[in-house]
Image (tube, rainbow, N blue to C red; front, side):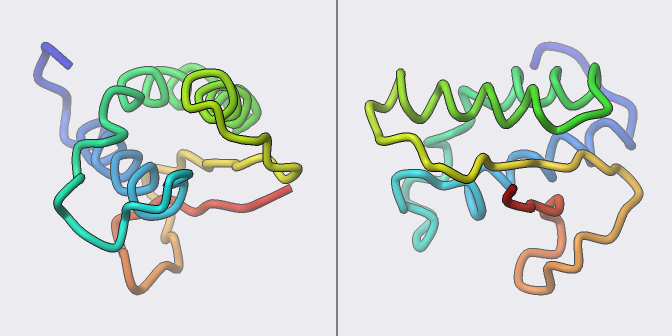
Length: 104
């Protein structure tokens, strides 16, 4: 990351990290913390896209490319959508810091 973020943006950054690990998790590793940093290399770009776009589509497109081209996995017909709502309640009680994820 390289710079100190204001508290609201740091919270968003942390939420996106949680979403990538616990919800997106295309290789199914979120059941243990042994690989907690597995998706953190994608975090800066997802964070940047969340700040720059009102629509979740650019994030969904980016994660689809990561899944199919970088990881070599099959494309999921339903694109992952991450809604970067800093002040919103995710409704996720198991992982309360996660952003809401919907599938479309």
